[in-house]
Figure 1 (cartoon, rainbow, N blue to C red):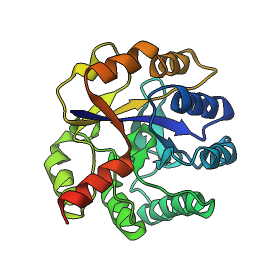
Figure 2 (cartoon, one colour; figure 1 turned 180 degrees about the vertical axis):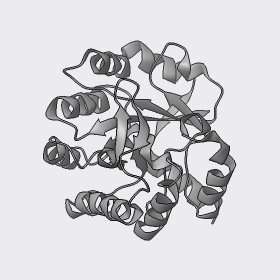
Figure 3 (spheres, rainbow, N blue to C red; figure 1 turned 45 degrees about the horizontal axis):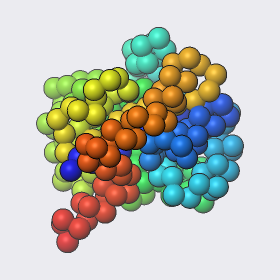
Figure 4 (cartoon, one colour; figure 1 turned 90 degrees about the horizontal axis):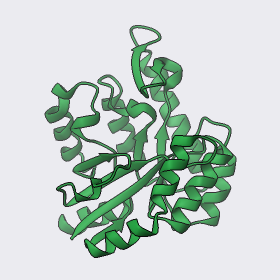
Length: 236
């Protein structure tokens, strides 16, 4: 049986996106979301998370303030300052985690806005902080690394620290992606209202035919917490 985490990014970005994510959770296949702590919809997202306690919540780390961003492609292009102020970045990561925890939210995984957590200089800091806060799951895959030559090294760091990750990654909805070869995967999606591309992903996430297809193909919908529990069971 295949196992699939359907994770909605940008929870907390604004109220329209929050509404789309919750609708996709209640009426679709979204099982998990990543909360961004730096945007206008943060407090609204906190309230919605508490109203939906079974929704898996992670941190969607936002470090855009330190980097130039190509928003049309959704990628980091260069640091705003070199060398990077790694001590300041360390403090900002902890600040965002502490802010979420202070609201009574449990963080079960970490992802990065624009995959910022996978920048070469940032990744070791993120891992150390995850260990400190006992956050045991992360979004990690070769195809989303900024430097794919570091894949084996980064994978070894995660494995040696007991941080788990879905071994397969699907970047957004397209027809047939559920039929890719995998045992456990994360599908990243961005449902929301107010932007055409987000509303497309919202519609896809709630497609009744998709729900039926997943059942027919024996695809089990899981969360990052389920992934952690499975790892602990295997290693106890």
